[in-house]
Image 1: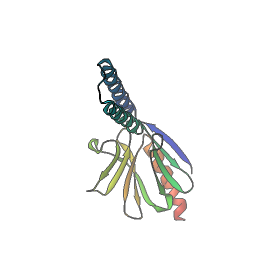
Image 2: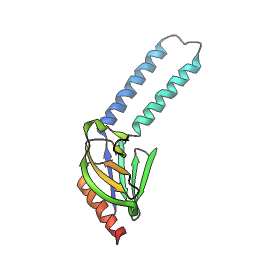
Image 3: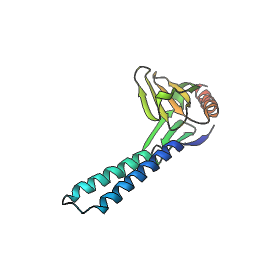
Length: 157
């Protein structure tokens, strides 16, 4: 069973745009002042600003794809990707993340769990044969859970 869904993180888009406006304002203010002797530091600051915007924008969406062999996730334009063999998944269930679990990629040592999320609190928790637990944030938790369960039944036969 095939599945392909992208969740948009609207709050992350708003945060990225706010940071972009802040950085643009800082650049405009810096250009209004007389040029300094050290132009290398200006380049470094601009590079750090660009890198920050690049990283923030890469967490504005989360795409989940299920094909014949893999459950794949991809943040934004693909800086971070992860795939799980369907044959390695033993269970999937819909869960609610706690508010303090946050968004992005989060690791929780006390529960041996990694969370991938861009918005909201709904997620699907998968457990692998190797004992690791992952949560994939989604705004279609029931549909994703059913698709995973259907896909892993095929591998269990």
